[in-house]
Image 1: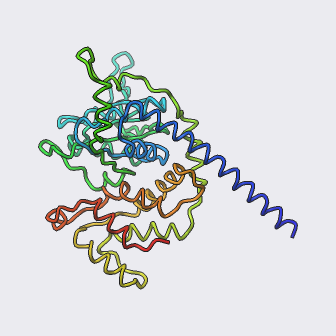
Image 2 (image 1 turned 120 degrees about the horizontal axis):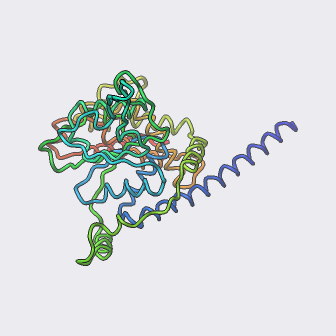
Image 3 (image 1 turned 120 degrees about the vertical axis):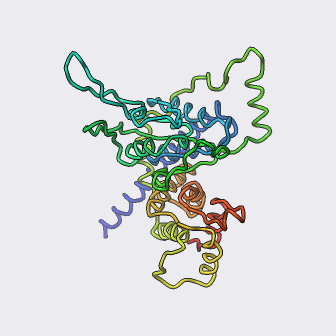
Length: 356
């Protein structure tokens, strides 16, 4: 009886300590947001999404029209973390060696040496990623999935903190190559960057007004380092300790499973759930893979960390479901004819999947 009491007290103490750590982490993450907001005006969703992907150890795809501070946000993130940053402008004539590096003949030693490319960095910005052909995408795919780059017969490991942030323009399609589904599935999140509100745009105007101003004033301001590698690793360990109840895990699986039209049913369904699935299945050609469940689990933990909670709630799952799933669904021609995008379909799925 005494042992049970002692164990219960220890569990309470550990839970209290975990809660305190999470509260401190939330304060730190709020500081990050404020530091980012000094340069990236009016893009709170993008700011939080970038940090979510960084802490979850996943790559991130940014989609938005030109001039919406996508590149500025990535540069600011690199400055705030103090990590090594490289930018690669993707073009149709880009070669895999332009990313990975190549073998160079050394006349003095009478042998080849490896000259590393810009991919050997902590944060890599793949600007306008959909403008490069398939060979370049295959080289990038190896780096994103396996954390290594092959040059000649040598496979070289990438840094432990390796993070690909890719941007693409949804407006222009001429001279672009749609990313293959296998590569899209490697991105933890897809963030849609939208136009700022009028008040935010007015603030941008005032900060960059004047004929004497050259370039972007916000971009020239050097951010303070508030998240170094040690802090990032500490936040990741803290996120790992956040509890996810089995009922919430089953909810994640149910949400992802509801995106698959050809998925066989292993157990009876309610009439409402069956009707809900039938209402969206004609708009989906292919659903999300099991990698989506893993991504949803990781992103939901980071969302709980943002809110200062020691456990994941269904609201955290709903909050992260759209950026986790929007690039993993292959929509049908009927969805295109009805002018429905992936966000609308995912929100419909969230509306009929039972919440625990």
